[in-house]
Image (cartoon, rainbow, N blue to C red; front, side):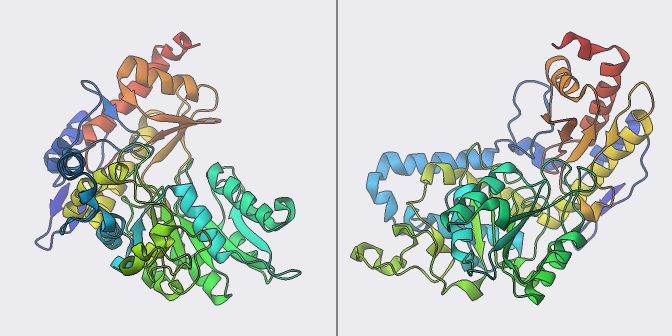
Length: 437
């Protein structure tokens, strides 16, 4: 079922069955099973399938948070200047830790701000519309709303109308975006492209390499919101030639609610002037010169705006250590296997009448991220509530008809996937959803 080669590579097979024994056997042979005990679960016997929205708290994240609290208690302001693990360089240090997960050099990644603040910072750096020529931004109509809100405001700040200058690539099916449609729209009037690495409803994973090459060939800057992929999918930012990226740390990276975000800047852009300047982006060796002339650090760190939020950043250190130890490629392989198993169970137990569930996520593993969209046309919201109230399963609902489920490789079991399928079956068999208003 699952085995580790001498090289440490995770090998998986797809000999699935609806029998419970198969799920139990998969768990026995799971080489990543040891990581489950590193996490805290909310309540007894909770099946937590919402790690694509908020990852669970790990013991390592707790330890790194407590370490910062201890330093604050014992050192006060001197925590900024201690010789080892100085808060002054915390954002850069965490960026260097995260860099292997995205295929970047250490100085190209920094932990700073939040997802939308980093979007504003990077887009304001790269979006310089030329009157009568390159003025448009390409995005897609299925992107998470905050990205669209931010893009519209950036266009307005340039004195332009988003209705005219923001191009939202339409979906053919309400679930996915045709990548060739995006490329077809890469015309001479486009100043910038901003896309999500994965769609938040369906989990469609874009071919970032393919789309980035098309943008590069046309000399159009391209950036990516990787909030729904970093930590569950390996990336190769430098190899693919992307210009910039940003992502949150509280989903697959398990940093905690509102955890500090990350941004990536390709080193070829280090000399650019940050669109939003702030003193923590100043050249570190001279930051306390307090000059009124801004000289930004020639690294991703130059795009920091405010002082690092140390308490919100602290859990990232411990959380990242688990990802690095387990290996992002092993995490990805197990994630694909677990989502494949969930799809198999839905297909074989829950698609026919009276269940009428269906999968709204691409079936090709290369085209999906870490969660599965299970659709139910009439009762998705109430079914999701039943899972939580009557079966202690935490998943989430996205309008109009999607229940999102994310088996997380570091802490979810195959048997939990099997149990969730049985719960969905029971909710329909016994019409439990009718108890929900």
